[in-house]
Image (cartoon, rainbow, N blue to C red; front, side, top):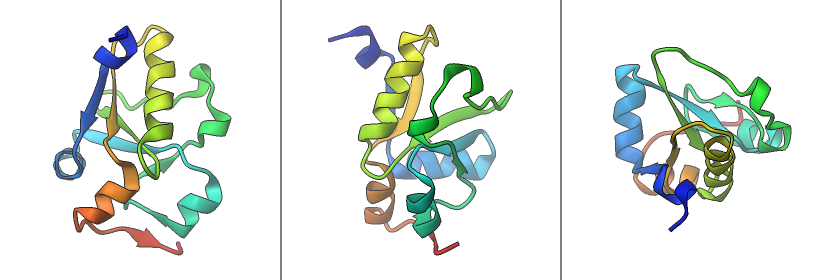
Length: 111
């Protein structure tokens, strides 16, 4: 098991929802603009993976950043990049937006 796999924390949709509702976390969606516009999780912030640069990665002091995408692949890749850059750990939504919907949680469409 690699260091990036050990430091990658995967949260289930209901865990993410609880952290978002409590204000403890911010959800950063790494999909592209068109995907985000079509459907996203309310309150999430868009930062496309294609624009990823460590220097411009968002920071929310006092809040955890949870990374999300459609199925969990891109968010895990961004998390691994953050870990490889020296960030001790990273958190992502296991299964992404698909898992969120499968859990029956609400999304914003066409906004």
